[in-house]
Length: 90
Image (cartoon, rainbow, N blue to C red; front, side, top):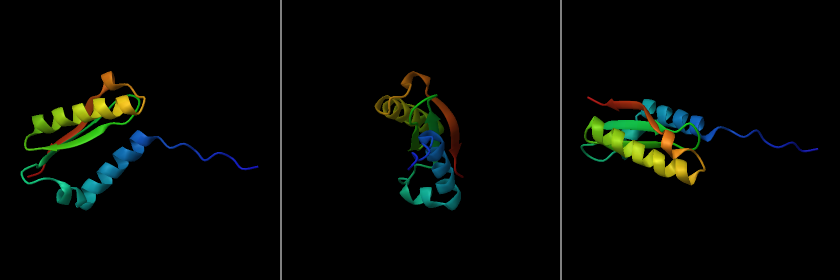
């Protein structure tokens, strides 16, 4: 009998990949010029959003907007989106 594969939590997997990308320096190559701040917002259920911006406040707002959009599409809870990570590179 063939069992069903274990379902991975997409949000945690995505968050892990984001951190891995940031640690390896690949994220810098995909960022636009002048976008040295990034933020990650996640809902309690569904997919979150990562965004880059020229300031911390812009990155936070963009990530919240992305989180609301992606959580709604993935059947999650868009009204629970919160920024969990926000930093600017030097």
